[in-house]
Image 1 (cartoon, rainbow, N blue to C red):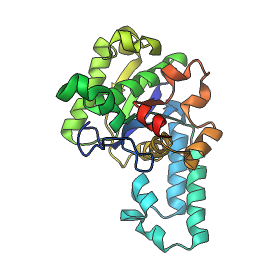
Image 2: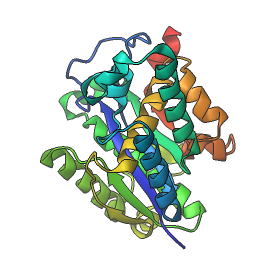
Image 3: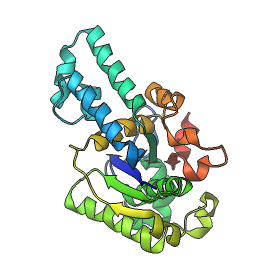
Image 4: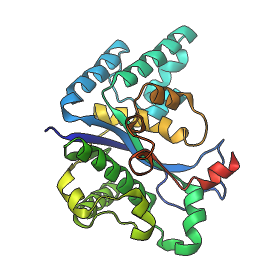
Length: 272
């Protein structure tokens, strides 16, 4: 059986303290997330072709970067100069390309004010970097998807700096050797995989540069998932309506332990 591939991007600040607001603000959300897309290895060539066709239609020879597209900056500064009909056509084409991708969106999104509210008093400076929590959760849930399909999992995060890449590699190794890092008493309700399950299922960890088409698609999927944790966000609603999220393939009973994870969102929910 071919493998299941997990392409990951990150979003937000992984340090719990750096620039973190004291309260959650849905209008100016503050998150850290790791997530992106799952796809079967036999579908990767078709997904790459969709990416290539879109870039050819718009004469794009550089990576698709979510924030640059949203803010019409950097290499995508030219979007500012399109007519309104042409600008709309670009976004309609991009949305259609993302929907046509044979992928499922998956992520772990952590609200930083909520994380500090929950753990600062108890753990102080001993709190984990947020990437440890997010990586462990999203990879374990992707591994559950792989197991359910009789596959093994290969993990491809976007390459960052040497230190951050080393952290993720260490988290991956720890998952294979020791299993999930969370306390059994608090994590039991999520039916965590054993270290034996993870050791067998987690096949490969290999960072990729932004030039990777699938890392770019992971980036474009991740932002709507993050933003949609705070407000009703139409791009996320479209992905959900089109069945493009891992949640769309799960029963209500499976969602808490296998779906997209919004962690420490208590303050956000209270403020709604």
